[in-house]
Image (tube, rainbow, N blue to C red; front, top):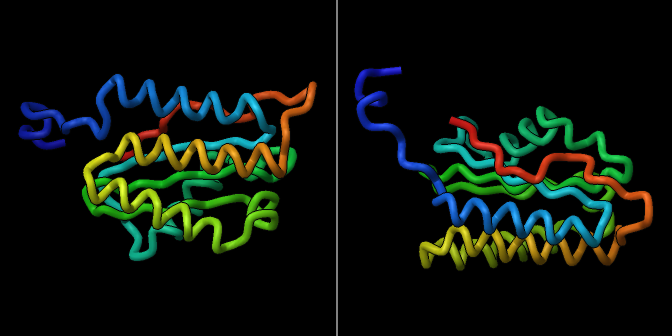
Length: 153
C-alpha cells in the first residue's frame, strides 16, 4: 500500500444508502425463491474477459454449492467499466443465454446514465423474478449464501 492510498482512501463504489438498497433488493428477491444472488464489485478486472473473472469469483465464493445449482453472480469492475453475469447450470439451463444478454443490455442502459446502484437493483429484481418462476420458494428453503455485497480491490 502506498503512502498516497493511506492519505487518500479509495472512494467507495456505492454510498451506504445505495449498499443498503442493493442488499435489500437481494433479500427481497431471495425471499420468494430458493435461488441465490450475489454482487461482487472491484475496481479493475484483471482478465481480458469479465466472464472469466466472474467465473473465478463464482467458484471462489463456492456459489456452485447451492442445492439446485441456481446461484447468480453479478460481477462489476467499476473503473474498467466491465460487468458480467454468471448463472449456475441450474438457472442457466432454464433461462438460456439470451436472457443473460438481455439483462446485460438493460443494466448497461442504466450505467450509461450513471445510475449504477439503481441499475443493479433493477437487474436483481428481474433475475429474482426468473428465479421465482423456475425455483419458487418452498417451506424448507434456507438462505444458502450471504446477501451482502462482496468488494474486491
